[in-house]
Length: 129
Image (cartoon, rainbow, N blue to C red; front, side, top):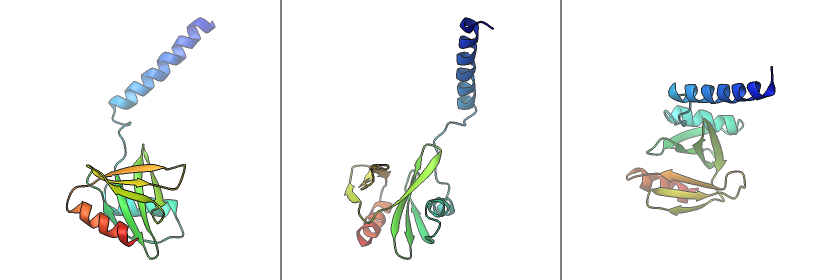
């Protein structure tokens, strides 16, 4: 088949698949369904650390996870989750909730949407970490 026909067929096919996946709802960003989902995400990232509890953010895109010796943050990144400890993170309050500046170039900044009373609870737990 000539290249001037094959090229557009491939491009149109890829675009068609992307549009079809989007219309089927397969491109929606991930959210944490419940505390168990957040604990499982922590366990995938840190298999040797046993999570004790998780507190979800208001938009269910992040969770504060506590273990026996650490406090960490799990958040949604596309269709996957990321987890990091927050001991050395710089945390500040914003108009929408809390902002975490991680000392990690792979996950430098996370904004968490929080409203009262979750905001007060998160601030207390983060300050105790």
